[in-house]
Amino acid sequence: MENINGKNLTDISYIKEIMRKHGFNFSKAMGQNFLTNPSVCPKMAEAALEFSAKNLQEEILAKKTAVIEIGPGIGVLTKELCKRADKVIAVELDKRLLPILQETLAEYDNLQVINDDVLKVDLQKLILEELCGYDVCVCANLPYYITTPIIMKLLESELPINSITVMVQKEPAKRLCAKPGVRECGAVSAAVWFYCRPEILFNVSRGSFMPAPNVDSAVIRLNILPAPPVDVKDRTMLFRLVKAAFAQRRKTILNAISSGLGISKAEVSAKIAQAGVAENLRAEQLTLEAFAKLADSF
Image (cartoon, rainbow, N blue to C red; front, side, top):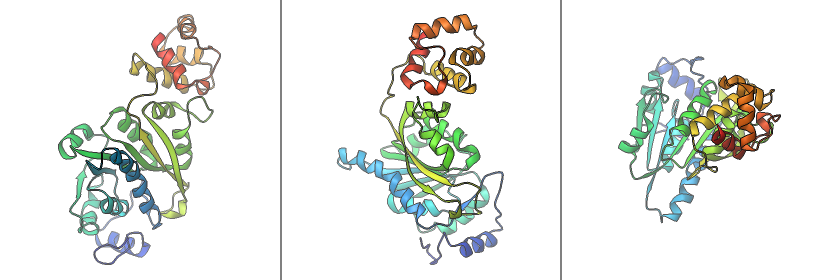
């Protein structure tokens, strides 16, 4: 991972040198941790673009590949993506990192850096204006504190992308990939399985970062489905029910939904019966199909 000056972007001494040169300090509020394990980013980049390659084979490589990266940091992962994709758009919130990225990634003319909050960026518009005709995927080392909001925005926006490859905290990674109907499943898991097929690719130890976090991480890939696996009349109602049921997951769905939606138990009981679901079940016991039937009955 050499840059144009022969410096290794995962070398701790070089990271400290470039931070010192640009007067940069880590921000706890932004959850900044830079990767120092040289094997991680090439594997992530390969995984991100692997799914695109499979899609493009069916189209006889008719399209070019593009990646939207969230939070490039000093450009360790960005560099690997630029080597493999036709175009990379990196969205970085911290403007202090912009001059660093200009230096570390100066050799790549297929990179565009946007200084903005990805939660505020109109990603549909960005893809339409900048990546029209490209096969697009998302790749990111996500700050732990904002993992769920970013993933939910990417999914709920229903972007024309084929996959999302992200590094997240190890335990949340397991929950994100847990299939509805198993104990580890949560509200976000149900949303993930509605839009895609998730898979855990590999683990990353806490010692792979500077500064080292208190937990290990995992890289997961969410392979976007061409269409949801269940038919439902109202997606908004589906996810309202999912959130209500999991908000009080120790309670039965009868009690949790009644409390979460502010509807009488008698009315909720009737709707659950109409859906053909047992009212004494808990949220973690319901499949996506069962939630869809509930949503339709409501």
